[in-house]
Length: 300
Image (tube, rainbow, N blue to C red):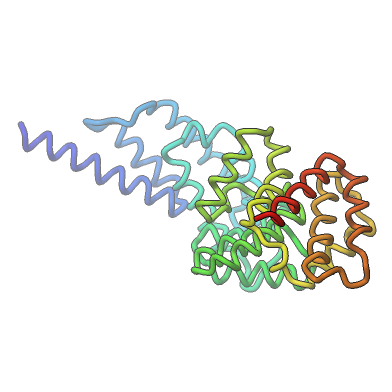
């Protein structure tokens, strides 16, 4: 009897391992077959019927689409990610996500560095597959041929952090957040201290408010150092402020970059006061906080 129970338990374990591997391999049919066997096993999964229904709907949708179409597959993944499936298949979602990205990577054209859909760059595919050098290069080549992009820049930050360069990671993250924090993702914070600061900001703000407050908090705490951002980035931000149609909170971030770069260079050209004047006009309350921070730094 004891041997039989142990054998049944071992079989369930092996089925579970195979089931999750099928999900990571994007083999939904194989995953469902293994999951069905688990449902008949000595230790069936919790919420089996509910999860089986969710897996069946996933299989039907994928079977009806052209799996070689990058845009369709990427769009369906984003649709799934924002829907009820991650909650229904909570313990399985990480493996499903890995399977989608592995499939996208398999059909991604060699050398492609653009966007599959508006919020999914090729660099994200490489990053999610653990190909950090490829993610870094795809993000770099996209921005070299187009323009500064916060999502690609944050992906660069994550990739170099995983490759061991924490200083460059924070510099790239700062460039992403001060350009347009609304395009950044919580998932791509690789630094434990950064994640702790994000949790702190989220605890005091709505989600939208948190994203525009976050770069300011990192700057005030000297976690992000504007003086280390490149001159090319400064020039790009300068050009952006000339025709900036972003909300006031984002324009303030751009002006803070320009003001701080001038302050660290002892204000060649005398533009520091002009930038500060525009900051005060854009967001008076944030400008008061900005000046208070500089005053505090002077006393340290």
